[in-house]
Image (tube, rainbow, N blue to C red; front, side, top):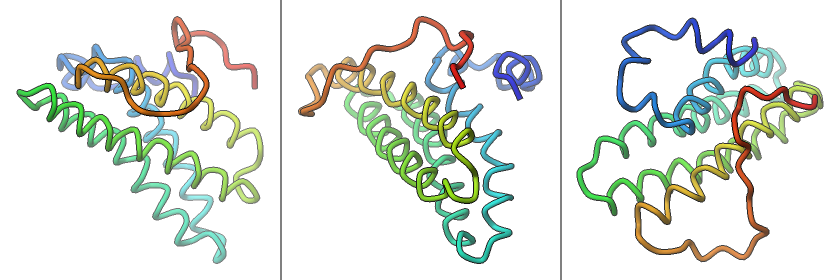
Length: 153
């Protein structure tokens, strides 16, 4: 499913919430929806049955932590939940990699691209909420202008 097609079919009750304005939330919700087919495929193979559960819980945790964090009054509380979402995004990328043999490289590449976008956004949001920089030795992440751009794979 294409992102724009998915977005049009999200119920109005979700799209009307102020949280919907956050691109990182929309991406994480999209990923949780398309992940359903991935975990359904993984659960059919005895070798990846437990991996499917871990993957689904970690992907769902991204959305859940963004939802909970958005609802917090204090910036430091929000930042803490967004950091949890960041950890879950990285965990999810690892689970997708471990499911590569069943899911295939095209699925892995697509899901990793979405997760990397989520990570980039959270690495921008967390310091802004916290009022300080994250202490992370890594190359600078650049966030794509819009998610509506076609993915190269």
